[in-house]
Image (cartoon, rainbow, N blue to C red; front, side, top):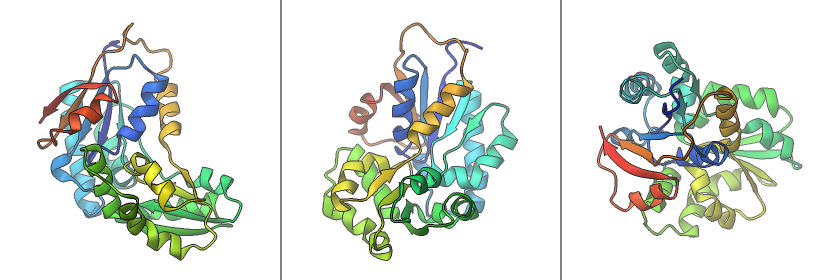
Length: 260
């Protein structure tokens, strides 16, 4: 294994940074390529068939260009729809992102939990299976919000996002689940709005899969060589990113931004 072979993180936008963050904390010297299919954003409103074709195709181009040691589909929507297709098409380990329903059910005392994701994620049979296996004794309230994804992108691009904006996006879920004490942030964009969500829904704990995915990546790469010192990460977008996004990317150790 080439010690300079990077970890590749893939999302439709900036949501995957919520997975990149805990991974960098565990593997600080890992070379990073962060890829955002900004030309295809948002994924949550696209059809299953379109994503099943698009995601493996773009990942294939990225793998050919950057030769990563491992790829992370840091997007719940893309993972629940296209993970199996990507694994069938590409010859490298691929880590997916799934809603953290199991830890949410373990944490809940009221037995009412929310699953807050995109419209595409919350309708997936995969979510039905997770709820049946790990939260059978819970009332599971699902809510898909494209608006919340847009708000996360806006925040990272330096725009002002208010608690009122976030409250309007999550209110249908909260109102549909009286007594809810835990919500699953089933979109990697949403942890980027953790403070605003907490203010909009006080008393409801948040659970996401970022730290668990980081531990999985560390397990799969255990014993592999890394550079002796951290290298600046690279981000690549399929369309021109907002100028102000460079500052936010810098906070995650990304110094170079390209388009493909």
